[in-house]
Image 1 (cartoon, one colour):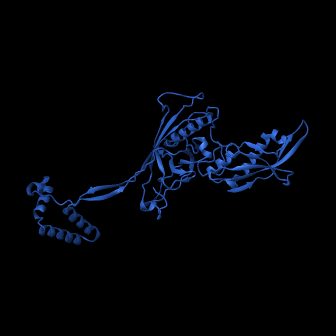
Image 2: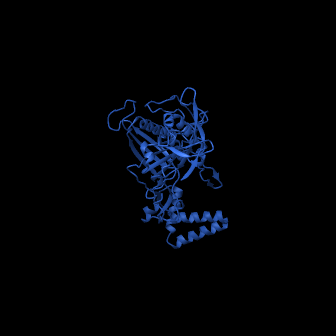
Image 3: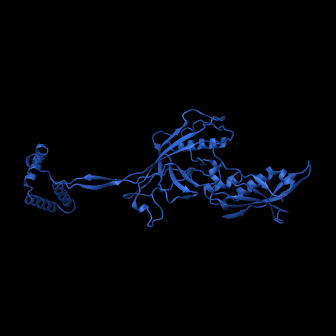
Length: 424
């Protein structure tokens, strides 16, 4: 973990109508830990030069609340809001030194009491913190307008980083992380398709590990036939295309002679009679034989895997009810196709990266998944069979079922050369 200390800044407090004094403080931030959390200490100095440093309080990594110690004076404690505001600005000033990813910035925001602040602009992993559009309050209502955004060149490009249950954010155990990624099409490169460019992450959610996890790797095989006559015809055509007409004639003559010496004269006669008259199964009718079909099971191509997961979500407070609402909204809106302003074309919806994790790391005993498309999002608002709601109109429980399909098949060379996990 890294440590950064902000610049010293004064906090002006008043003890009476006229008298005021300055207290010089800085905030020392350490992190992130494995859960992307940061610890903060408020340090008091005797002057702006930094003499006489002493720690006067610590901040909760989840809520940003200050816990003062015995070094904090009564005057400091009575002006807690001013010191908290100054410390918030100091934490923000060291963001570039300690937080590079959206998850880390979310953790750093939480340490200053800004856990709901979004950190992505939809085009990069995030460089500058940005407030979530149309913020929701914690009283159970939804702030902002529910009016459609209208048709424009830009779709919504940020959904925030969510977690259910909220408490799991600070104590990650077995979980699944689903990231929303901006879809980027592939380009044609010669006779092949170029690699898909990496899309920008524009939202994410951490959910409990699904109760039913299974995969099925499939490839397509099918039985095919090729009679001796088809072989002979194919050989002649290949000789004509690859060599010359003389070579093709020679190949055809050799095939006819081989069939005649192998007792195939009658088969040839019946075959050409069928072609001229349109009769069917003439050889079988007249000789009781069929031409050897040379049946073989042949490889047809790869298949695309599908994954389906279901979660039942029951909010335990008003804040969590809004978090569940944001999660449902994120999946519904991000999977929807995007209209162009002229309505002539539709842009592909966003795509998703799913990771089955143990804590913050991928669980190598569970399957790895390629980037997926969300095919179906089904929400049951009355999973217990009756309508029940809290005072803020939130449902008592929700059941969300998501069906994903990988957008690319699994190939042998997608695996590493060592047995480091169960793989795809």
